[in-house]
Image (cartoon, rainbow, N blue to C red; front, side, top):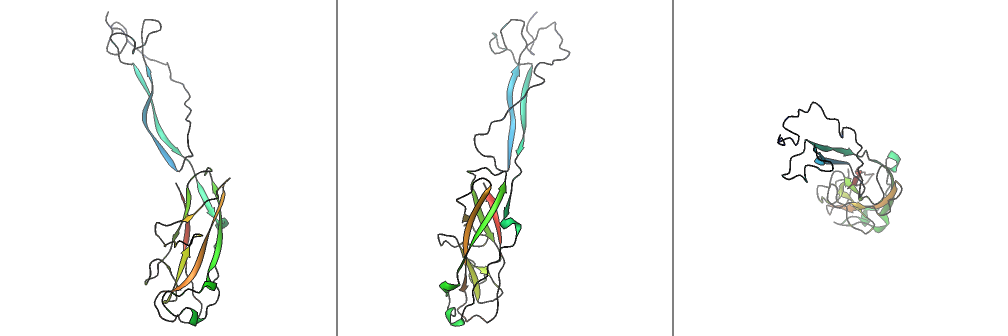
Length: 216
């Protein structure tokens, strides 16, 4: 008899094979998982049949193909979530401004700037994960770097602790540098700015924005 292409023998007929039908695979991660990771079809074992003790298909001359390939594939999903300010609205109250102090284009009285700390908690987000916080909202029609208010002559500038402008919907994000044990914080400063060069009309004004944590 001669070896068959299946790695068995010409007179043999394989009815069933149970070798290796129950095994445990452990996956070791070398870095924190974020979101979802796909595992492509990967061969982790080849099975051979041989009548020679201690031999396998890769050391028989000529080499024969395995009778079975053991492969695995799948998806690892890590359910992750973050809550900003315990899910409550962050209300920033700006002080009253005298019209003469904000009548020219670009005016933004220093005493009208308000800094707010934002605390958040996350679930299943490991220490060392790259986190940042983005700002979204309607932009001022006269200066898209600022948030739009319901006073047509005023916009709101949002900046980080390094005085970098955080443009609504832009690429700049509020930095998060102290995240540990599922908790972290950042801060931003809100400041009214004259965006038209006209004296703003009197009365209250407001703007609305959304903060969103980015997990990478």
